[in-house]
Length: 207
Image (tube, one colour):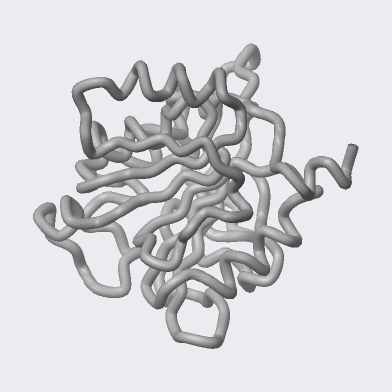
């Protein structure tokens, strides 16, 4: 089972709406124009020129949220389940900025991504961390739902998000990194977003 995950990816679990809002919506959004995740402050116009990649995109909720809530100029999801890709494409009809590719996350081109979002599973994270570290451009931001990613250093920001007890996407944190220099992996920021590891009073968002 573990070797199959390493070859292919992780089981599909839909991202909770509370986490989508925490990433994309409002003044405090992790990927909002005024967020300290960016190496330099971004205007809304600059965000609209950016590209987001979702690795293991399922039925496309992250891709849709990126362009509709987050105002990203374009977003691409990579998914290996044909049924989920068909559903994602159906839900993106009339939205040309949203694309969904029937392709493994391991062969996805992230070399020009401004943001990579992933909801992975522990057995794949070691290999995924190596891919992100090797291929991401300087300034790229990584957001991981629920799990830390090896090889990227300590997360620069951790935002706990509470979801309903019945949600398959259980209450957990969003982990965030940014690449600060070529050849040095993904490093720390001088400021945190929504709390940091070890803080007692971290912000929590509810569904």
